[in-house]
Image: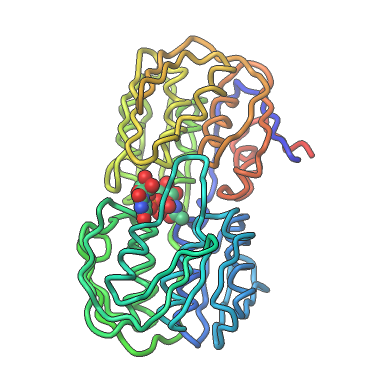
Length: 416
Ligand code: UD1
């Protein structure tokens, strides 16, 4: 199993390019199921999760053309197997995103229940409830969600903000008969990106990006081309890395508007940020200040950046309180940060982080995707060598992380 070896203590300088967003790519790939005509996606990130989703779609009968780098064209002329099997779903919970489009297009779908997930229970009851409100008959048997029926427009009020729940129902509603209204919908930029692509395919959607989305069903969607939005979490991770390690760098091809909460917190931590079109520059030469963080649905502070900010706080001056409100078990990086010398106490869903003067390199283990990013940042500021085990988590969501950080001058290498 691959590991990452990082020799910390080098300030970061230079320029890197943002990749396409993982969390936009996954629903967009599933959107191809809605039309018999080809969907061409550009700015597709090279990630294990994207590869898994492509395999899943290919098993269903979708033809994929990946011959051009950074592009994929998906043709779901026929769907032979409207099925997402356990073997693939267990490795990637986002496979649930196939449920809505399959049901809407084929009138039937079988998707394995995602099951346990390291960062929390993450049930899919909102997806199921919404599809039932739209007229689907749903059985949960043998670990599978079996959904059948013709969908009709309905009013759905989500009990909590769910990103993939909103995306699943929005996709299903595009081909339902009549109008669907999604209330308390997720406002994440990836939902709006998906709506842009669906509109290019002929869907009639208003309000995506707000908490009320209205979808008027159409009988058929056509082919389209769509460029996937830049990854705001990847961008935020590199900016946090520069803030932590010190130095001056730029992320080009980014989407600054999707990062307001993160950029403000980086400024509070003592970094200078300058935005120019799709370029975000960051410089941190002075001391690093402790900043409190409380995760919330967009436009609040993203849960996917919580762990990276904990790494920042570990070396900051003062005490930061970091509160996780979205997932019940998303503090697994704490134990690993402690191995590097961080002073952190977890109280319920909050971590009290007392900044220390130095972190020291150690062997640590990645437990989930964003926890891995947190350990990379901590390794960049720690004295000596940090070795991170189980980096397959990183490969699910960061494209060539060691190459991008090396381009910024970090001493980081993948060890086979
Ligand atoms: C998506 C993102 C993930 C991010 C998360 C929160 C993708 C592929 N993944 O995950 O990176 O961390 O949003 O911003 O876009 N919940 C229920 N019932 C449901 C659905 C959700 O109780 O039917 C709960 C979950 O357990 C969790 C909360 O709602 O506590 C938010 O989850 P959700 O927004 O659905 O996360 P994902 O869409 O899986």
